[in-house]
Length: 166
Image (tube, rainbow, N blue to C red; front, side, top):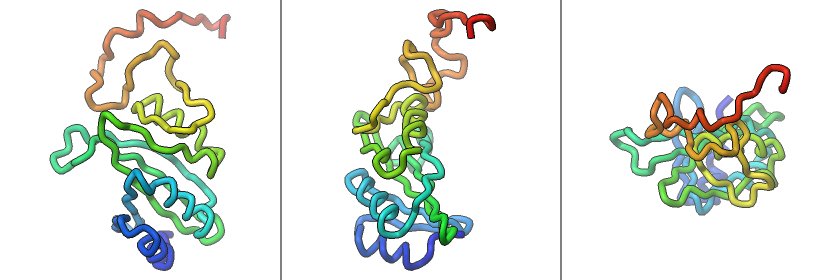
């Protein structure tokens, strides 16, 4: 169920810079980086969005109309009313830093680590921001559009694990 009109009106009333749209019956709001944490905190505390469904990122490197390169996406749900809303925040290099939301949703811990690991988005204030899917020695971010499909030859540096060692 999309976000109720009251929720959208409350967001627009409190965050004048927010841009709201709808796509296939789902409500989307674009939040500037400066107000991202405040908007998510408002939705959690005041509007009852108690479930962080996912955090992901999109690399818009080759999109014609894209102004910023990365789109950070937060999918939220209100368990009681079944409302859902998507909050997007656009980022561009060299500053790929946003505040961590682990203080709002404990489950954001691993989601933020995955986005860091795959895209290089830094979550300021995260309690343990380190790689979760790739080895610590890995220096690139493989879900970026400019990362080559065959890699850059990093695999020869990784330790080989045998089944009896795992």
